[in-house]
Image 1 (cartoon, rainbow, N blue to C red):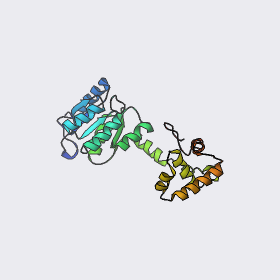
Image 2 (cartoon, helix red, strand yellow):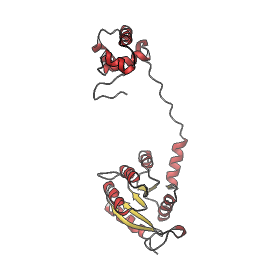
Image 3 (cartoon, rainbow, N blue to C red):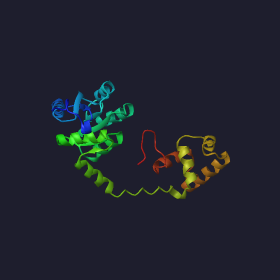
Image 4 (cartoon, one colour):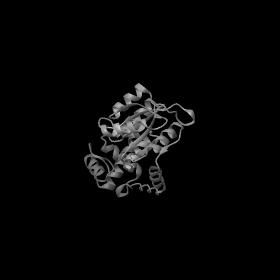
Length: 235
């Protein structure tokens, strides 16, 4: 029997599947393979993420077999949109790539399965059945990669940067607001303190840092990474 006339596990009707891959030869090969597998019926195919989302909206398949790297809309974004807009459709990634930069964004986007394109027909059928049963459809290679990632010790959080020149945390906060262009009155409102208190903090931080005016204060904040110039980023 072919996938279109064979029932799924435990007498279920065949899983209705959409195949999405930007390479026509690959896509047609996957469709042909799936047509030979029990419990799977291919109801549509597309060449990019935009087509994937449109096909899911039109056909309401049970599962999308999704490539990752495609034009217009990649597999991660398409997965995110499908899971948000059509939660009844599951996504199994079927891709060449098994690196962390491909795997984890796809799973975070909502993919329930992840196979590489060297997967055999039995692996594909098992992955489809698993995601329809509420389990994860992951190839053994991907399961090992996940375990390796989870077993790696987490990097220690970086120590918070101490304000320079003995500035207190509050004085540094006032300095950042000065660099953002706020007046004393606006700083007072932002920090819920009096204007007099703001002036005291400014006098103290000017004395500690050897600053003469607000322009020097802004440059000082930029130089020490406490604030960022427009269009720049703090490292």
